[in-house]
Each structure stands twice: as structure tokens, then as C-alpha cells.
Length: 241
Image (cartoon, rainbow, N blue to C red; front, side):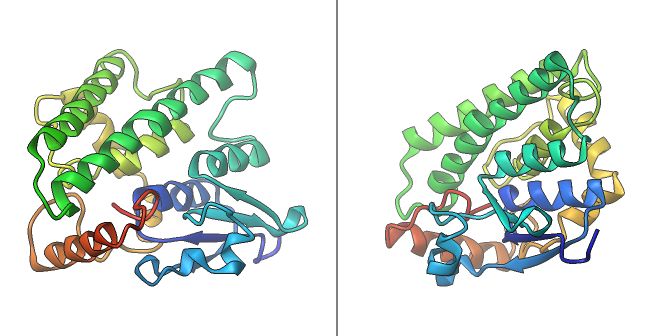
């Protein structure tokens, strides 16, 4: 394996950190290209040739003829199948991982993303929208907590499903949702945080702010930058914490 096996196009967001965590867990050699989302670097023709949707993350596998993969969940599946790790090969085991991965892609990510927009970034405080998305986040967290009461991880052994959820769940305070009453979810969150590859992955790249807590000057500036993106009509999907 060469040192230039994979290029990861990313930024310090939960979706970006999903893929850097997976790459660190798998020990795959990769180089990182950090895109400045506020400067619309994800909309350049060069990057749009890799991901027509103009979002991070995306990977290019140079060992496979510069094969490009976009969408964070698709990146995780590709890396797991490429290495034969972090997802079982048998049909039932693979399905369990994919079911929980889809739960994150279709539920946890979009609902937390909308909670962030209305709770943190939108110029007006529309309380029914805030309540709606924070309430849905909490409902989904309860689903995870209930499942984790009976299982150490989401789908058998530690897998890409855990990585995908963890990258988002760790930022629950940024969405304005507490998990103090969800002991099993907290146990799972803390156990994954203790993994060395996870600790490395969330520093690739490091966040400008600590998304696991609230309210310092850097966080306020970050929210203001994101608010400007909202006001100018830019989509924050894949470009926000």
C-alpha cells in the first residue's frame, strides 16, 4: 500500500469526522484535503467532479484507479468492504449494520442538522421549529438508548454504524439536546470516545470549537459564520456541526 492510497476531502464536521475515524480505525494510509466551506471551496469545478452535490466528505481511492466516493455513509461502506473490517460479510450481519447506518443517515443526522439550524444559526428564533427538531432528536436518542440497553454496540461488534452515530451524538449539546437521562447512550458514547483511533479521527481536522459543550466566544463566532451561510441561502448539509 502506498502512502497516497486514499485522499479524504473533508472539514471539521460530524459527517467529515465519520470518515476520518473510519480511516484511522482501519489504519489505511490517506492524505487529507481540508476544504474551507465558508469560502465555498466545496463548490469548485475540481471538487464537483468528485462530488456533484458539492458537499464533504468525499474520498478518492487512488489504488482503484482514482475511484471517487461521495456521501459519508457510502464512504463508510466502501472502506468497510474494501478492507473486510467494521462490517460483517454475511448477509444478516451486514444487513444489521446497514439498518443502523441508514437510521443515522435518514434520522439522527438530518434531525440534528435541522436542530442546529433553527437552534443555533437561523436569524429568527422560531420556537415551534426548534421544539420540533429537538424533540425528534430526543426521540431518536431514546431509540438508541433502548437498543443499547441490550447491546454493547449497535449492530453486533463495533462497526461503521457506531462510527456514524457517534460522530453526531457526541455533539448533542450543540443541538440543544441533553442525554443525562439516557444512561446506555452515555455508556456507549464514552466507550467509543476512549478508542485511540476515534480520538485521532476527530482531530482530522480539529474543530475550531468544542461541539461537546456550549457557549464560549469561539462558539459564538462559529454560529455567526453559519448564520451568514443560512442568510445567503447556502445549504448547511454536510457543512455544519
